[in-house]
Length: 125
Image: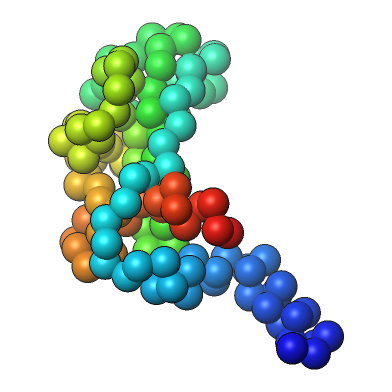
């Protein structure tokens, strides 16, 4: 690949288009483990960004999921139940912006659910 081809590839990666080809290369419709992050609501600003239905208090712990390219505008969050997250798909996920309940998945063939970024895709990207 010439120098200009490398620059075009970098530009595509920088603009966030990198996820679609990576998911296709990394196994297509095979569900994976989502990239999840446990975090603490460190103050009133962070607390005000969470759905009121959660009934959270300052310094409560929540789990945020990394959304994929297809889940634009959705910020999947759930109160942290503690312990292992092997049953992450059955948790009561909500959109932090609207407060509405959402279904999440790592399977790109389930088009009605919010697609989460997998650890496998994140490690390659």
